[in-house]
Amino acid sequence: MRALLVDDHVLFAQGLRFLLQDLDESLTCVTASSIAAAVAAPGPFDLILLDYALPDSQGSDGLARVLAAHEGATVAVLSGDPRADLVHELIGQGAAGFIPKASDTPTLMQALETMLAGGVYLPPTALVGPAVNAGVAQAVAGLSPRQMDCLLKLVQGKPNKTIARELEVADSTVKTHLAVAFKALGVSSRAEAVFQAAKLGLLPTSSLRPVGQSDAR
Image 1 (tube, rainbow, N blue to C red):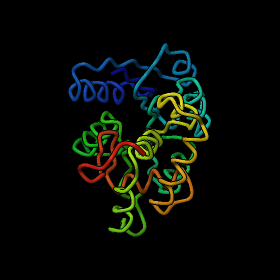
Image 2 (image 1 turned 120 degrees about the vertical axis):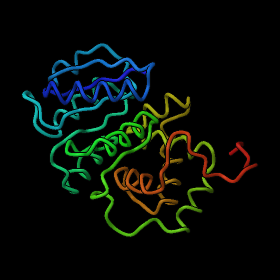
Image 3 (image 1 turned 180 degrees about the vertical axis):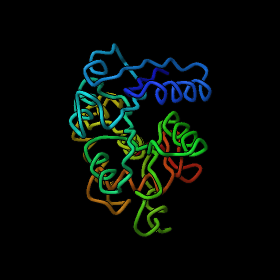
Image 4 (image 1 turned 180 degrees about the horizontal axis):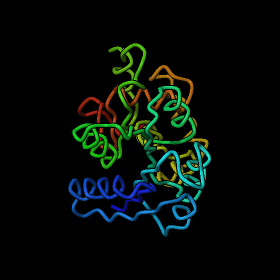
């Protein structure tokens, strides 16, 4: 696995790098201190941890530039501002996770473990609203393998065209599968789908399908 850590705070970046390598000894970690350096970093990367505020970018502009430069990478935002509306905004713009910089070490470890596994980490303050009910969990469990594949790749922050390429299907097929997944989750947008998936604990290795369910659909 290859990770890109984009942060201009040297000590914080070094600490994150050590934590990442402790969690995965095979991980190769590249660092950058600006959006320009991150965009120019030779990929591909599996995971990108991106500081929200950098000298050459403030806010979502940096996220958009990194997502465009490293298509297919899972990008999580790091920030000292944990406001729920900011988290929702960044997830809606393509981030696959949000890690508050003020997190204590156990929480930070949990967040990194989740992101290394390809899952979504969101701070508890962002997971507001009613819990996912049993009916939604059952509906998601009833998704076909292909529909679940599309949903899990969306959870990783991947756009439809990347999902289509990786699954070797048409863009229209991905849209159809995601429409079914959104209906099962009871959501109408990618951001809402990510939040619901986080509440369900969905990971790329997740299997909520009943044992013996056919893979033919």
